[in-house]
Length: 96
Ligand SMILES: [Zn+2]
Image 1 (cartoon, rainbow, N blue to C red):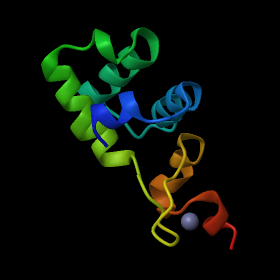
Image 2: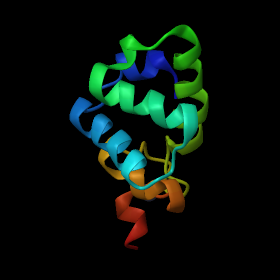
Image 3: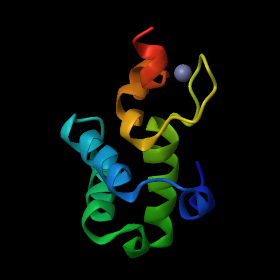
């Protein structure tokens, strides 16, 4: 997941931030990644310094964002990405 994809994709901004909030609330993040993610939620990714943006990309999005479902290979929407951290599946495949 790259910044370009986020900016140019047809992702739903509300569920994108909802996903980040779920990550924070579930205790996945700690240290710098936690602080940076809270900053993105409250002030937007544009507020990050270059180094912070790197940490966010690599240790938050890179670690926890599942782009495609492991079974059907469809893009997993933001509203399903939180449960996909563990399962790697979209909602439809998860209940199969
Ligand atoms: Zn699927």
